[in-house]
Image 1 (cartoon, one colour):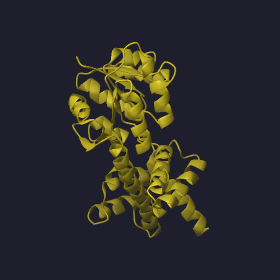
Image 2: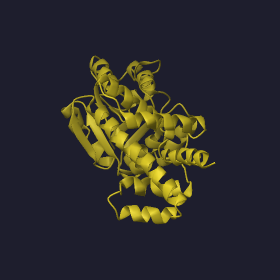
Image 3: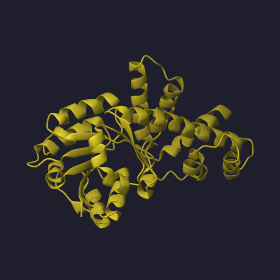
Image 4: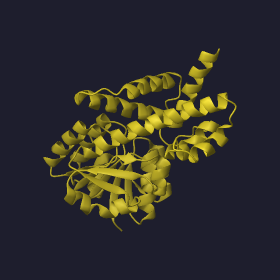
Length: 294
């Protein structure tokens, strides 16, 4: 049975674990939250006591973490991967970060003889669990080829984009369009309902017109029904929008729609929606619409 490590067992990490266990991998996982480690064991995985413990037991380790600071702590901090007596050969990082940080981590790990593949995910945690998510991979081609079995287990939707940093660049550009699509859909639903059109009927209409996008299917019903069970946190997308804006500034560009989107998300978070599904952007659209109408 091939062995793979997993650090970070949140919504996405759980989906990764499900797919890997289902495909016959022995998954050795760690999270700072004991309940998440217990959920991994219920899926058929094995518990580790620290990132170093994962590293000592698995030749390849997958990361599913929130921020670059957490990634660096897991890699280089106390009880981190580099403190292990035996280190993995390859790190596959599915987290979303900046291209510059990905390149920096790759260099630092390379000095220690460890290959680094950035593989940010395009898709929700639900799509990860069903094998529909797309993995945007940057790094060494040889390392990518040697992890073909892992990416096949995760749905065989990994795209090799070139050197380190290109996965993060692609993810940010994709997420820019995706996030604005969600916001536009939310405003369209609120507008249609204000005109007396049933929300579900409006979604059906969108599917027949050029205004259709996959966001209609992924998030439309959640918006209409007010079901904000989390598949991807609204606050997590706000972090990504910040990365987009900073990347654009470094390239000498501005993103006017994303600037406004960031302010919209900030207000939603201030109103307590940060831990809800990112479809909850419609709640902020509704609040603003109601204020205008009052």
